[in-house]
Structure formats: C-alpha cells, structure tokens
Length: 450
Image (cartoon, rainbow, N blue to C red; front, side, top):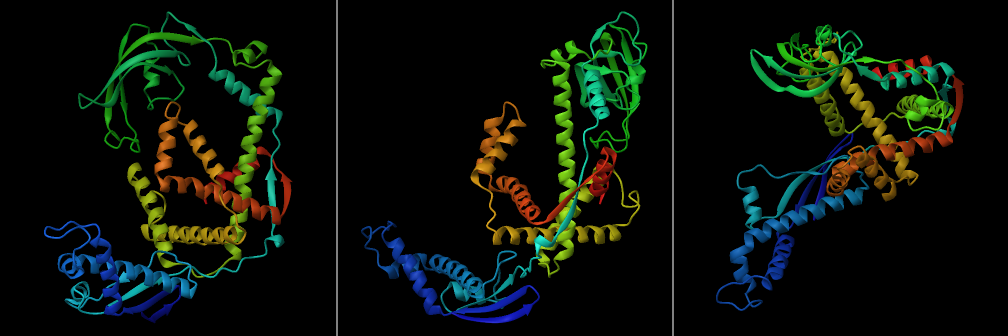
C-alpha cells in the first residue's frame, strides 16, 4: 500500500492511497474460498466447487467486498499511524475518470482513491486550580414560604354548589363544540371540562363571556385565536363555541391551619412549612448551580482558543438554525419582528455554535485525560427517571432506551458534562456570595436570554 499526503491545511488532511491489484485479488480470492464451503451449485458437491468457477460467478461481488474491506483497513491504518483523533468519519473520494471505478471492480487495475480526513485539534488545557469563581446563594425567606403555602391553599380551595349566575372566580363544569366558518374543528369539542372564570386557562375572552351563566344554560362564546397559536391552522381565526353549563360552583373560605395541612397528607402545619421550605431551597440550589455552571463555562470558553473542525461547526450551526427558524415559522414571526435581520441572526447563532463546539471539545478532553466516565448504573438511574415521567408506560420507555443508542447518548451527554463540571469545581477556588431571591433569579433570566 502506498500512501501520500496531498493536503495538510488547518485540521484538514487528504491522502492519496494506492493498493496493488495483487493485494485486492488475494483478498477477493480469500472471500471466494470462504464461499466455497457454503454455496450449493448444481453439478458440484458442496465444498468441491473450483475457485475459478466461483470467480466467474461471484468474482465481481467478491472484488467489491474486498475493495470495501481494504479501504476500511487502509483508512484505519492512516488514522492510527498518524495518531489522529477524528472530528468525523473519513470521506472516501473515488477517481472521477470514466470507467476507472469499473476497472477496479473488474480486477483490471490497482485501487486508487483519495481519503479526506478532518481531525480534532490539540487542546492545551488551562490550570483549573487557578480558577476563581463566585457562587451566588439565596436563603429561603419566611415570606417566600408564606406565599408558596398561600398559593398551594388557593389551588386546593374548596368550592360549593351555586344556584345563581356565575361570577368572576366561580368554577364551572362545561361541555362545548367549537366551530370555525360554521364547521367543527379538530380539538374543538370536549365534555365535562372544568374552567374557573378569571384563571386565564382558556383563550382570551372565553372565560369572561361565561359571567352570568347558570347551570343548565347554553351560551355562544365568540373568540379569535391569537396569531401565534400553537395549532397553526387555527391561528388568527375567529371561532364560535356552543357552550352548555352543567354546574356552577363558588369558592369557599381560604383557611391555612392544621386541618389544611392534614388534608394534604401531612402531620401538621409545621411539617407543611418545612416541606415547602425544603422545596424552595432545592429550587434555589438548582438556579445557583445553573448560574455557577454558566460562569464556569464562560471562563473555560475564554481560556481555551484553538482551531475548530469546520464540519462540527457547520453541523451545530445547522441544528441551531433549524430550531430558530422552525420556532419563528410556528409563531408566524420574522427576524424583523425580533428586531434583527436574517444575516445578523446567522452571525449571532454561528458564534453560539462555535462556542458550543469549543466547550464540547474542552469538556471531552478534560473527561478523557481524567478518566471521567458515565457508569451503567448512572445511565440506568437516568432511564428510570425518564420512566417515572410516563406513569403506566414505564416498560415502554425502558424498552425505547434499550433499543435506541442515540436516545441513550442523549442521556449520557448531560451526565458526563455535569461530572466534568463537578471535577473542575473541586479544583477551582469557589467563594459564596449571599444574594436575595430576586437577584439570584434575575441573573438566571439574563443568562437564559444570552
């Protein structure tokens, strides 16, 4: 085999590979010998078919298989001999001259092709022991707990039957049939739906038109679907709903006491306070983690500069861009509505794609050098967690991940990333700064929008 490097530009390499015909014929003959003991051909006993006869019958297919195998082996050898880490699979480029490929398959010429390789860059990692990070933390205030319990009580407020007309705040059980252009539409019919007037559960204007309705009455509700409505075929269209009111209930008194706590399955009001405080604390801790992670990733992005594989950037950009354009299309919005242009947006999202690729390579390098891996047990726990989100379909979810390697990879990636982040945080100097809840969440919102 003769290998000649023909291109070395940035992270791109190309090699001209020539494999003698004799090597191909030896491979093809070996394949035919393997077939000899398996094929059945009239006139010959099994295992006694002459190789030359097999060559006449299967020689072309055997040579094609030999070429495929030799190309795979040659490419692997090039990668190994040069110590390359690949950014993508090698791309094989066959000769374009008329009849060149046919002559190779027919065993009339050497195998000659070009392989294009895109490699990962060498990454010089920063000294993570020199990193200084600020971790913002917020204590759970008594006011937060009180507010959360009041909201919980509001969601569990008792309702009693009402004989008179419905007012704002009342709860109704209704059935309805929706029509657009006098024709019922998909998803526009429902029975025994509970709606609370003023809760904002329905399209704007729907609930308000039920004020004054009494049980047993029929009403016509006229609304217009918003332009950005999720069901695109209804967006911006006027609709009429024939509504039948089945029951009207009025809200009872809101009482937060020991009896209320016990109605939720807790021993006492004190236990309810503790439970709510713990939950809010967990929410604060999650936001704190997200903010600290964002600060760390910003630092890693600034500390590591190297050439990025063009194909990886292009693939990431295409994924990001498709998400952006699909979302705009679904909302029937344009880049002008977002205060930008398509050209400016492409520049912005390409920068985001470059950042993601850079950080992905840095985290992968840290993980590889420090032997950080996702265990089978960690993956199993992640799959179990996904199963719990689909009550009654746990086995179905489990089977989906068991059979789908890409789905498993989508679970492995964030686990691996978090383990690498934890590894770096153990080395870095992290100081805590006490902030208010508003400061903590305001920062989180700003970063989410960035």
